[in-house]
Image 1 (cartoon, rainbow over the protein chains, first blue to last red):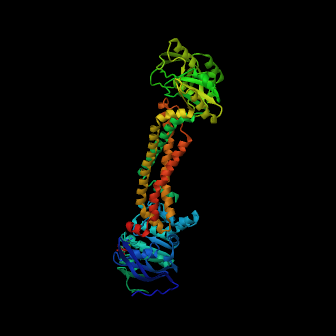
Image 2: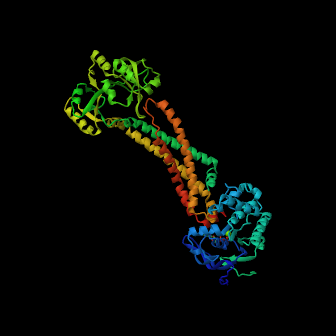
Image 3: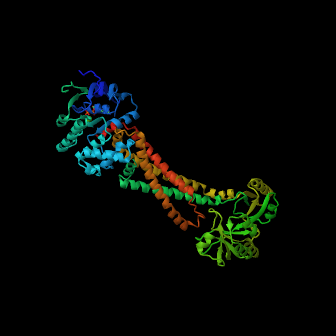
Length: 237
Length: 384
Ligand SMILES: Nc1ncnc2c1ncn2[C@@H]1O[C@H](COP(=O)(O)OP(=O)(O)OP(=O)(O)O)[C@@H](O)[C@H]1O
Ligand SMILES: [Mg+2]
C-alpha cells in the first residue's frame, strides 16, 4: 500500500520499509511496520493517528533521536542509520530543531539563555550568538520577554521560546511533538500561525505530530498512522 | 555552560546550603582530628637521629644508678652523655600540668639539644644559680612568668615544697619543638635527697647519649646495653624517636581509632553528597535528554554534573578549612597543656581540600554515568 521511495532532489526525508520495535522483557512489541514516506523540502506535514500508533516513535526516528531496526532513513541524502551516536548528535545540532509538548525549557535559564543553548555548540562569538538569539526572539514576538524565566511566562509564550530555540541554529527540519497539546485555543492558534509563517516565509520543512484537527488544518500535508502503519497518502498536492 | 552549572547548583538553595554546611563540618572534623593525631606525634617529629636514650630495661619508672655515667662515656662512639629525672610536681593545683625535668650536666645538656634556644646571658644565669630554672616560652606565657620570678612546685614523686627562680626562657628552633617544658638542676634535687637520706639519691631516670652520626646509633646502643647485661639494672637504649614512639604507642590504638573516625566522617559526607547529586540528577534527567536532542553529548552532561558536585564540595571544603583555624586556636587554648604543639600543617589543609574535591568527584560519578547513558527517546517519554 505504501508508495515506493522515489528519490527526488526535493525530498528532504526519504524513508523506505522502515521497522521499529521495542523489547519489553522477552516480548518484542512492533511499533512501526514497513513505513515508507517522502517529505519534500518546504512541506508542512501533520502526523495524526490514535494514541499509541507510533507517531512519536516515527518523529524521533526522523529527528535522529532514536534508531530504526531496519529500513532506509535518509535525511537530505544522509543515511542516519549509518551514523554513530556522536555523529548523530552533531547532525542534530546542525539540522534539526525539536519542539516538545511540554516546552522543556531549562527552568534556571532565562528565555534568552534557553534560546542561546544550542548555539553554545557552535563556534559563534558571544556577539554573533546574541544577534542570532535576538533575531529569533523577535521573530516569535518575545523580544520584550527575553530576560524572563520560564516560570514567569505563559504556556504559549514558553512554547514560542521553545520554537525560537529550535529555530536559532537555522535547521533544515523542525520536528514538533504535539506542540499545541498543552495550550489553550488562543495560544495554540498563535503557535500554529508561527509555524505556518516559518513554513511559508522561511521555507522550513516542518513535521508535527498532533491530535488536533485545527493544527492539522495548518499543515500542507496530513498522514495518518494506525497501529504502526501509514495510511494511504490521500491528500498529496 | 558555566552559568548553567552555577544556576543548577543554587537551584535548591536550602539543599545546597545544607550540603555545603555538612561538607564544611566534615572537613572541619577531618582537619581537627588529623591535627590532634599530628599533635601526638609532634614529639616524635622533633626527635633527633643522633640522640639515644638509655633507660631501665624493666620500665621507665625504675631508675638507673648515676654511676653508669662513666661506663657509658667509655663506650666508643659516645660523644656526650647527660641525664635527667622526671620530677612530676604540682604547680598550684593538679590541673596545672606541665612536664618538669631535673637535668645535668647543664652545659652539655643544652649543647646536645640545640633546638632549645636561650639568650647567652640567661643561659649563664640559669647554669650558675643552683635553684635556677628554665621554662619554655609557651609555658612562661601561660602563667605570665618573668625572669627572676620565684616558682614553687609541690613535689609528688619527691615530697616537699620546691622553690625555683626563673633564670631563662627558651624558644623552640622548630615548629615541632616543645615550648612547654620546665627544667631545673639535677644537683639541687639530688642534694636534697641525700640530706633526707632518700634511697633515690644518686639515681637518674634516663641517660641521653649523643653520637656523632646517625649510622653509629645501632652499634652504640647495642654496646651500652651489653655493658650492663646481667647487672642489677639492665638497660634499654634506643633512638630518641623510638623512645618517644614508645610513649605514643601506648595510645597507638586510640590514635588509630581517631584516624579511622576521620575517614569515616569523610565516608559519611561522601554518601550525603552522592545522594544530593543523585537526587538532583534524577530530577533533571528530562533536561539532560532535552540537551541531548539539541546535540549536547555525554561529556557535556558529565561536565555539568561534575562541575556542580565539585562546586558544592569545594565550597564546603573551603568553609570547613577556614573554620579550622579558629577551632584549632580554641583547642590550643583549652587543651594546650595536654598537647604540647598543635601543628595545623599545610599538609593537613591540603589533604582536607584534596579529600573534599575527591568526595565531589566520587559523588558525581554515578549520576554523571546515568545522565551520559540516558536514552533520549525513553527519557522524553517520561517527561512528555
Ligand atoms: N521505549 C519504549 N519501550 C517500550 N515501548 C515503547 C517505547 N516507546 C514507545 N513504546 C510503545 O510504542 C507504541 C507507540 O508509542 P508512541 O509514543 O510512538 O505512540 P504515539 O502515537 O506517539 O502515542 P501518543 O499519541 O499517546 O503520544 C506504544 O504502544 C508505546 O507503548
Ligand atoms: Mg506521542
